[in-house]
Length: 199
Image (tube, rainbow, N blue to C red; front, top):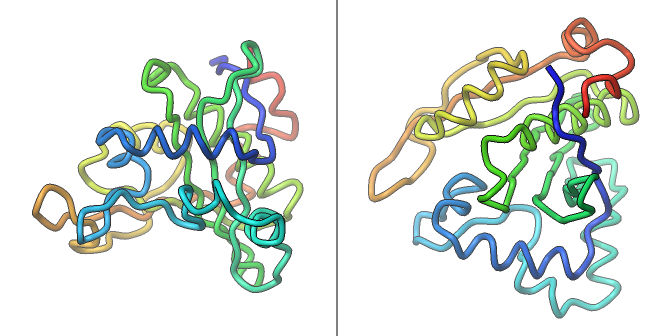
């Protein structure tokens, strides 16, 4: 299967402006980090609204973090054909354990279900395994996000466990699934050269 080609780029302030607008949409917010128990749209790793007016020092501290302790690395997702910003990707990295939690959102709703999420996950995993030399990548998917679960299953992620009632959603608590992939599993599925996967 060929996936649409995307590029993972450093985040710019213009990108953050789009993130601010995207998470105002209930559909996007619910499928990204959901909502806090008090109702506001969640965005882990940084506060997009505050970053719009942050100092250079705060910006660099957030987006150029090289701390060996658990830390996040951020990317903007760009459609490589149209050179358009379409989403955001994050890795929450624990170097001591050699693993990372992966998060991807396509903020452009008109591009949902067209393979851009899958492309982003594959490229982010390749970065984690090849460039960061991590051993495992995992995701935390709320049970109501069936599209995400189906996508990660189709990409080869394995169900590893369930977090009970970990996600607030529309006034109720819902389970979420932990799914993961190991470096050797990624190499078995996708090989050493992933460029052939993208059109």
